[in-house]
Amino acid sequence: MREITFYPGKAKQLPGFLGSMLFTATGIWMVYEHDIFFGHLVYLFGGLTFVGSVIMMLTGASYLKLRDDEFEFGRLFRKHCVK
Image 1 (tube, rainbow, N blue to C red):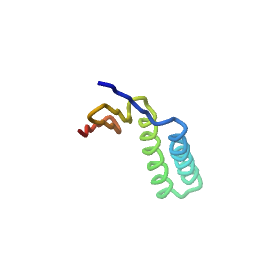
Image 2 (cartoon, helix red, strand yellow):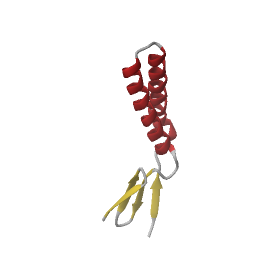
Image 3 (cartoon, rainbow, N blue to C red):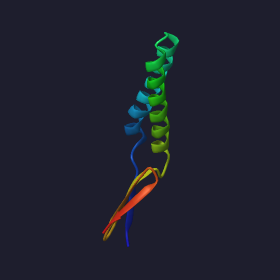
Image 4 (cartoon, rainbow, N blue to C red):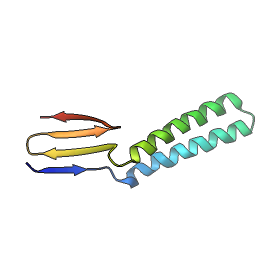
């Protein structure tokens, strides 16, 4: 049985990574400028999306395996097989 595995490119995931870093930095700047409540919300959201983007950039976090009679895809370490 032949099997081909595809992984997403790092260059396609880079905008999400950089965007989450920008959100985090903006939230920290907002707290520094005394916009306490919304600043904390923005940097917490940015920090959570940063963690998610780092996990997605790990090898094996998302993939597509094609076999002769089925395919399997995984995202965030959960896999699903379709026959």
